[in-house]
Length: 353
Image 1 (cartoon, rainbow, N blue to C red):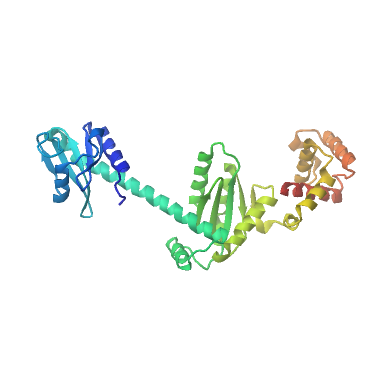
Image 2: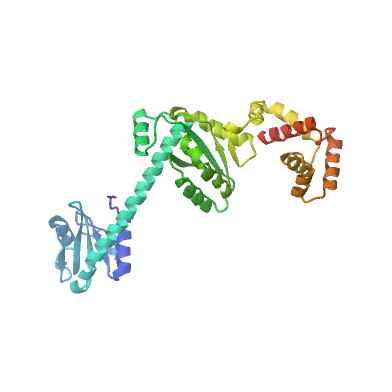
């Protein structure tokens, strides 16, 4: 059970008062009022509260100041697994307030259960963050600890896994987006995840589950995200899968990109930045933003005039004219295959700069 600190105790007394309307005190096992709806009593010694704690029984007081620091009312010890964790004191006429005693204890149990659950969730998040950070960043982690962690999560240590990195595109409505992401991730079996400040989630997923539940990850792209999927690796080599996932995001413009499926983009990703810059400048340097957009749409639609014109909301003849202007500026015709390849490569390299 969670430790009952002053903040939790104050929440308890205020919640109980909202129900019954009487002033409520929370008295420590040492007899000190650590929380009260009558704030001036906080810190006072409560003799009957102390006695109720020691005797482990409810004590009724019928007169004010009959005992040190005590007003009339009822004092109920909160006992959990045989130990007293504090005393609830309800101030008022005994016959009036005693009927709220059981209710006060029930409210206290509910609030503490919620606090225990919150604490458990935070501990679970911290554990996941620690393990994922260690595995994806190649940081030291005890083999025994990792083995126990995976056994508790019913994950096979010797199975194959991937790292999926989820990047949130924008900060607007970020809380809603995060809730959507976590709801989707909770549906994926044999996987665990952690949030990485400021805008990422890293997921470790068994390859078997990835193949069977890939659609759950693809669905997350609709929540203003981009997702990079790393290569298949054993647990001890997941830093490589993480690096591959990051590289996939870096060198591709797609929202959902799997490193294994990358072909020519991967070959050119290792080129020096200066060479990429020189190549893209030679191919694209004379084109404005509108012409670059036209070129991307044209190439993304497999050089189809009909499909590209429809995407651009222009007539085919208009698109032909625009392509003519591009060819005139660069001395490379996008409708000629070898020139189209040069354009395609230049556009991809430009995204990597």
